[in-house]
Length: 439
Ligand SMILES: O=C(O)[C@H]1O[C@H](OP(=O)(O)OP(=O)(O)OC[C@H]2O[C@@H](n3ccc(=O)[nH]c3=O)[C@H](O)[C@@H]2O)[C@H](O)[C@@H](O)[C@@H]1O
Image (cartoon, rainbow, N blue to C red; front, side, top):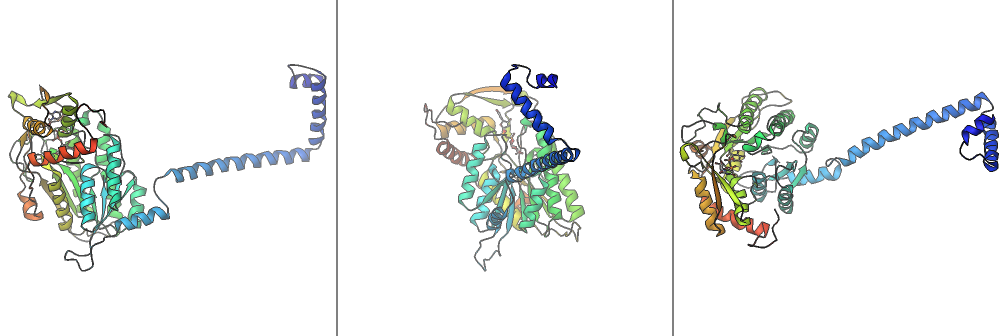
């Protein structure tokens, strides 16, 4: 027993401690005097451990639940209010639609959501606010939408549970699917992000749409890049699109095939829109017109790519307001999906349209227009186009969209860039030499 006491208090053996040890020992002996008391203690310890573990798992589950940015009665009320059409009763064009806009805090998503809301349609947005480019611009677009009564959920189109819940809460008539990993050249840096958003995300969304009752009609963003190495101009929807020049283009082309299968098997009404280099206020900072503007104003050089044999690159730059008209025209003319309970009940529309401007402009010309509106000369580094997925030119034939959607672009690059520059200067608050520059 002496040895045990020494083991319990090995450092400074002394009277007081030994006395304490002795007292404790007596108490221990009293406590564990009988086997039944020991059994009760053991039982008590087991019970304590079990309740601790179950408490931990409760804390885990509930923290996950509370951390989720969606769900709950208040959230559902916000969704329903935002999704409710507000067209005056008896409007010539019906009761209005309820549209789920994916990528709503993106460039095209914001403009389309606002336009839909302004004409009285119900709109709910979803966006994952990823950091591909400055998320504060996306937050500012969200704030703009919110000030017009459009609710944007922070969530990913890969989240099937969230999508199912949304379709549970609201019988959306249409989905305007604009969420995507955009950008042609970034695909070499981060290929997985293109598969994640443009393939996996698309399929998750289509699954939710085909399961929804009623099934919505879907209008979604494809890209002019699907024409790839096609050199027949202008690009028509009937031209070949099996020679993509970038992984981005390949994922958009895959999207066209994937949506076709959902149309064929489940009766989803599908409209794919091939956008041609869309630009304008609230645009994407990764695009050339935007980054050129930033660099020119900061006195930094810009890199201008040039094609083979010193041929200038050209794009069929299309102004955002024209694209918005094309998107709304597509929603208005999309026939209904025909399936229910995941089963097709009849054929549904499958359409693809070019939405371009039909007047390509060279990149050096784009720079000259920017210089004029910014009143600053650019420092240009002209280099040969690297083999990074770019195509030398794009040019849309828009007859099909004109015939079927009444699509008619009206803004040329000069006018459109003037509006962009005006917005840019007001948004970033830049004056030359000032430090008040937020990028
Ligand atoms: O219409 C489309 O399908 C595509 O349009 C744009 O892609 P892109 O036309 O390559 O637009 P920018 O990245 O703005 O490039 C425009 C032109 O500027 C050139 N460029 C770009 C960047 C740069 O630093 N220098 C430069 O000369 C490009 O080679 C291209 O000819 C978008 O980024 C894609 O998301 C979209 O799908």
